[in-house]
Image (cartoon, rainbow, N blue to C red):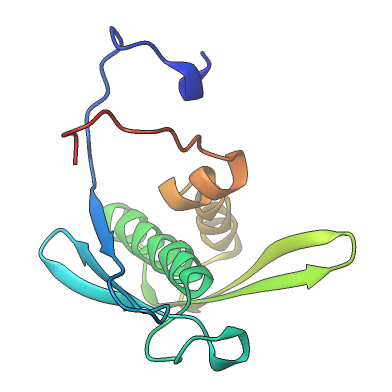
Length: 145
């Protein structure tokens, strides 16, 4: 199904909503994610004030935190001795295109099969799939937000 061109008759259930408001002449944006205030800005090198993470930094934060949370949840359900998950995420540019790299460090008395399974699960977290698969961004109807 082409989700970018879904008809009004199709039903989608909203699972998360965020409102971003930019009101000044600089690039800082106030974000409300549910009941949590967050902010975004650009670095000084591109005209921002560097008062908050960049939008790409927030995207990488979402990817890293979703990975860590998903792996923690999975290990807890299985009763595996995962002590710590550390996710290193970077946005890299080249003349041939951009990419995101991710390294996952798992601490605990995990055997090789458990480690392999957790790394496999990391490839299917909700944010990983949204970024990797190119989740469509479509205009919302008026009054929807």
